[in-house]
Every structure is written in structure tokens, then in C-alpha cells.
Length: 281
Image 1 (tube, rainbow, N blue to C red):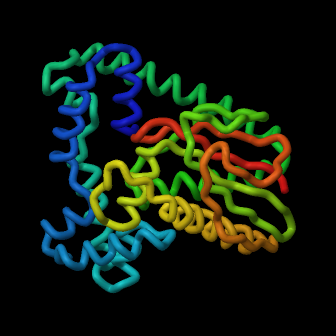
Image 2: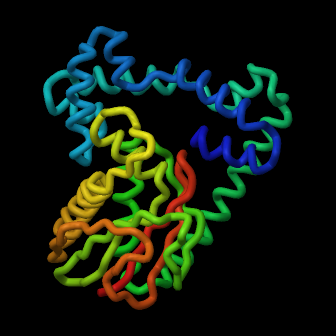
């Protein structure tokens, strides 16, 4: 369960306030160590080796542990032990909220059940709606690659909130990137984002701190290309011809490719909501 998404649920339910949420997240980050941190603590890898793999990971479809094994820095048994240690020492947001005295144990259990039920219902509804969309398999594969890339590169948890069969681009999400895929099928796939999400993507790709007030459009295009190139590789493995044009970023209101029946998939990440967009071309 994503701490950030569960925290947003608690905020919407007015069970905690924003200050408590940020305090709990900071407490959680101190307690839960990444696989790289555990590898350094266990003297299996150096900080420099972990940093190098983190840079490589931004352009691959592999998790850090897999990269470490491929690079000969960890053995398979080493990785398995680290994953077990990571799971055994992990605490969740409800534990921290109870520890800090923000909510009681019984209420924490009740809210966790409510959140899980809400997520299951939303997931079931979205799966049903996605299956009714033309080229549904292509869209779902691209969505899977988008979610995996946000998890791997940006360290974000992402869930699908709603599916819109006819979607207008939203003014609250002014930064748009689209990429055309051709071959045995033809479609555009992309994202409509708010400034905060664009900055998060750029910072994750570059390894540099977020630059406030600067919108790195080129980072949107680079991230889109990572997602779509990984998707095209999956299409080829399925025996389907596919190739991708270069991504194009623009602002809502600028000229965009002609599209019919724009599909919008509302996504929720640690940095708020954004849309994945899809249309046949």
C-alpha cells in the first residue's frame, strides 16, 4: 500500500492534517531503507556503485537489484537476502501514524480496510472500462510501462483512478507530451501533467534537485520515449510490428495532432493527479 496515496485518502477523510501527513512521511522515510542503502549497510556494495546503478536505472526496464546482479556486484542469494531484510524491516504509514499518536490502532485498521476496499472497487471499474476501448491491449500495455517507469525512475506509486472514453485536455494539466506508435496498429500515447509532476520527472532523470519555476519540457519527451520504447519492445516480443516517432511536448492551447475520441485515463501519483492520453491515429 502506497504511503502517499493512503495519506491522500486520510487527508480527504479529514483524519489527519497536512502537517501531520508530512511529518509522518518524513518519519517513514527515515525508517524504511532502499535496497541500495541496505546493500551499503551490509557492505555488499559501495555508495559509489549504488549511485552508478541508480543512474543506469533511469534508462532501463530493470530494478536496481537486477542491475546489480547483471553487473556482478551482487549474487542472486545476496539479492534475495536483501529483499527479505527490506521486507522484514519495512513499516507502513499506519504504524507511524499510531506511533506518533495521530490516530488510534482501531481507527487505523478501519481506515486501512476502507482504503483497500475503495482501491479494489476503483481498480475493478477501471479494468472493465479499459476492456471496452478500441485497441485496449495496446493502451493497457502502454499504461503498464508508464506505471513501471514512474515507480522505477521517479520512485512514485501510481494507480488508475478513472477512465474517460471522451476526454478534453484539462487546463489544470497544461503540459502535454504525445508520441505516435506505428506498425501493425497506429495510435498516439502520452501524458497531460501539472508543473510539479514535470519537475519530479526531470529531477529523477537528471539526479539534480527540482528547479523551482523552471518547466523542463525536454525531460517530458525523454521520459515519454523511455516508456514508449519499452512498450514497443513488448509489442515485438508479442510478434507485433511497432516503431515510435519522436515524442512531441506542447502546452494546452497549442496545436496538437488531429485526434478523434481522445481517451483519458486519470492517474493518481504521490505528486497528485495527471492524465494518460490515448487516441487512434
